[in-house]
Length: 328
Image 1 (cartoon, rainbow, N blue to C red):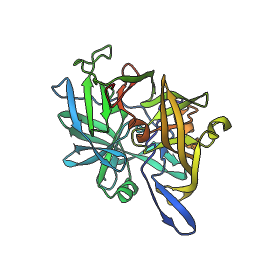
Image 2 (cartoon, rainbow, N blue to C red):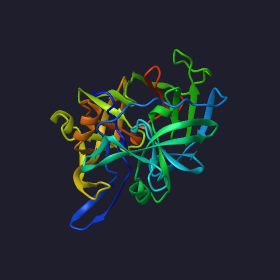
Image 3 (cartoon, rainbow, N blue to C red):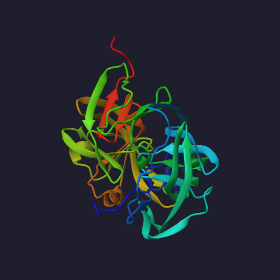
Image 4 (cartoon, one colour):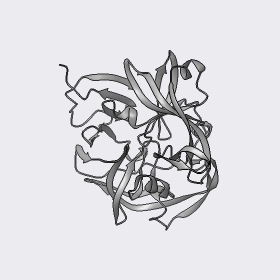
C-alpha cells in the first residue's frame, strides 16, 4: 500500500425508494476515496479517566455519538471506515483545498480533498485539541436518515483505547490502555466469549479475515456500514451460498447509479464462531481495493456488530465478540 493513501469515507447509509425508470434504487452515500495525500499524526485524547461510558443513538443502523467541534454540538457517526475525523462541509466552511489529494469514488471522480484543523473536539469527558480533519458534503446522509450530522468520528481518535460496543443496550465503553495495550481498568463482559481474532491495522484502516464456504476472505471492519458488503468478484463458490433476493441500484452523492444485489449471507466464520443470516449487498468495490492497496472481499458493518458485544483493541490489534446472554 502506498504511503499516505487513505479512505476518506467508506460506506454510508442506505434507504429504499422509487426512482424514475428504475425499480428500487438504493440510496447509499457514494464511496469517496482520497487516492493520495500526506499521513497525519493522531490527536492525543485528554481526560482524567480510565474508562468512559458513552451513550449511543441510532438513525436506522447508523451509530451516532453526540460531540462538539469548535462550538458546534450535534450528532457524529461512529465510522471505523474513516481513518480520521470528517466534518460536514455544510456546517464547517473554513476549510482549505489539499491539492496533494484527489477524491474519487465508486460512481465517478471528484475534486481535490478539503482539509481543516479543528481547534477542539469533545464528547463525554474526552477532549482533543488541534485535530486534523477532512471536510466533505454529508447532506445525502442527512437526507436519507432525516437527522443532522456534523461529521464522522474516525479510527485515529481511538488508537489509545479499547472500544467496546454494545448496540443492543445502545452504549459504547472506552478503556484506556497501558504501553502493552492492556486495559488500565480490567473489566470484561460477564457473558461468554464467542470468538477472538487478530486484526490488521494499516494506515488507520482495520482488516480482519473471515471464511465463507471454506474460502478465506479479507474484510474491512466499518462501523458506519449498515450491512455486510461483498465485492462482486468473490469466488463463485461463495456467491452460490448467498441468498440473493433482488437486484437494485446504488445511488451516489453525485447522482450516478451502479447495480447492487441484495440478499442474505447464511453463514460467516470469524475465528471459531459462525455468524448466521446477516444481510448482505454485493457490488463493485474496485475503488476501495485500489485505495486500501488490499484485495478486500467486503466490509463488515452493523449486521456483524449486532451479533454480540464487540471489543476492538487497536493497540494489540485484537477483536473479541461476547454473547449478549449468559449460558443457560
